[in-house]
Image (tube, rainbow, N blue to C red; front, side, top):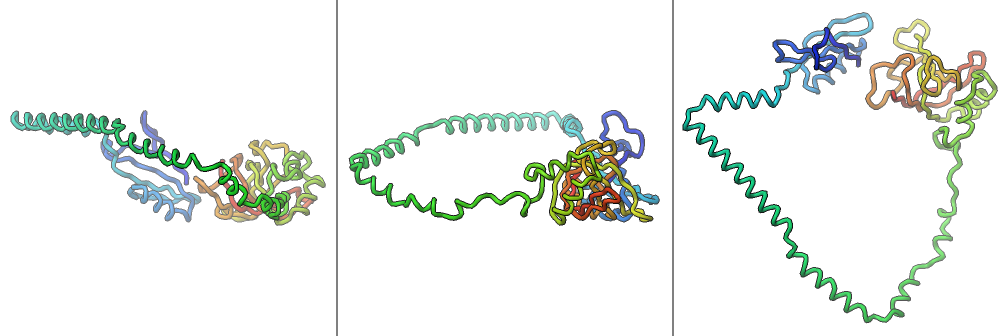
Length: 300
């Protein structure tokens, strides 16, 4: 979802919020991709915004919402003071006396509570009673306690086959990362995007899941589609100026196929930084692209 201010903001106003109707309402202008209007509208209405109007464009729809502007504490105090001044002198004295009595009651209750919380009387008796059982148990001969320590077998832990099992080697079922797979760590540092190392990795780990931080180095429409894309991702944060690592590519995907998670935007673009979890597909050597299928994608 893309939020843009409808006009120039006044000083102190948050972006996208415009005071209208003599500061009685805040206006929220949102630009959403075509086809996502219903979900955008439902989301903002759940947050307390009232739908006003929408204008459809070729790719995006501009939607306008509003909600009453919250009043400050000072405004409520001012209204209370005006109401108090409007009372008769007798009524003002009655209200003042009532408030004073309420403040006094709060102070008295606070003092009582603080004194009650510091009273240690209840702790004296249990401490004496706790000593007596220990003194009664002290004459027990030490040789009677020793058999209890031998009741537990000392050999069982070493005979348990689960304790002797070694950790599962990385690469047999785990998600491949730079921390558990040396080949993947080396792959992300390569500068030969068409080299044998990329081909060998794709062949060896086909259909395996990988996880890494990357950035979008190129994004284009897939063939003649307007909402399906070929997205190339390079390791690291340099995006379109990246010079290392293979050319990973999500081919023929829409934004829903990326399975965006967390505080996900409606779409991603060039140089956006991503945390990618994907499966290895194949490596067409004539294209120098390592194709991967998205599992989950998070914008960093």
